Image (cartoon, rainbow, N blue to C red; front, side, top):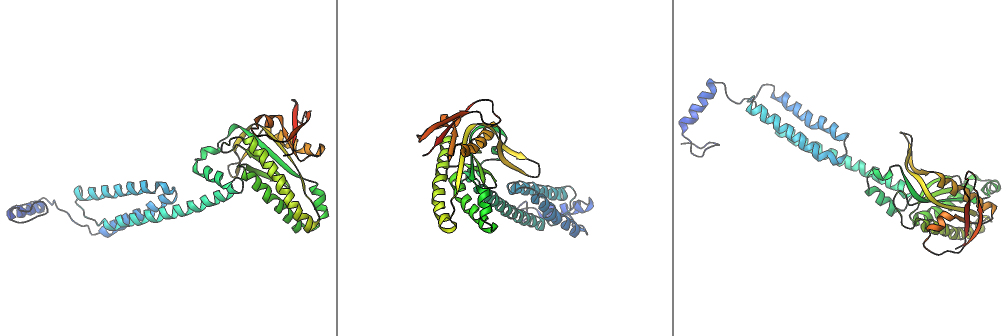
Length: 332
């Protein structure tokens, strides 16, 4: 009686008989002369092939690729042993597969994290950090094109052309403009608004997109009032340093607009278009004619929840509109 892998007490003569039978029928396992080549091919698959697949896939798919590759190696090993009776070392390919998957998963995660930080940094320059974090939590569907009620804000520096002619040094001029833009943008993002773009010394922003915002009309108006407050503080500094004061006009309008990711396949931006945007721009220009700082339309006034100091200024047809528009001046 002898001990074998399959039986702790097996007749020795049966072992001899099985061995002789395997020899006579050439039914036995063997390692081929070129087993080294086979092993290298399996290592090549576990490293280069799997690595290329992982390189072009997000890190989230790493685990799926690993299990599929692992299953393929197990199947090949099973087929070679029990069908072809070939024994090839699979330890090295399995270890290579594990190391390759781990390496590319970490690499993909690293670069995705860097890209995520870049996107967050870009979003943070247009919206508040809390809104940017919420946008990153959602899928890309949040940037789809849709019709949505928004409140649009335009602001512009009065007499900036004259100011640029008075200040000959462009470095100083840009420095003043940057010092103006920073508190204005902060006043917008503070109330969860989104800075859409800059037109030289003008700013366009909107509220209630891409994420829904309760009382977006109030948020836009409060943002405008905060801009005027911070401008007063900035003017104290500018008057001491350069003997100048900046004056701005702000126009606000509410209504439906088309919002979403727009542009070419190579470059696009999340923005909005529509009649609501055009009216807001026209209202901002009217602040020059009426010599006031802040104007809103009837559409915005109807959405306001809080109380503000305002007076009805005029009923008119803005350029490009057939319907009459009622405008109000807001002081606080």
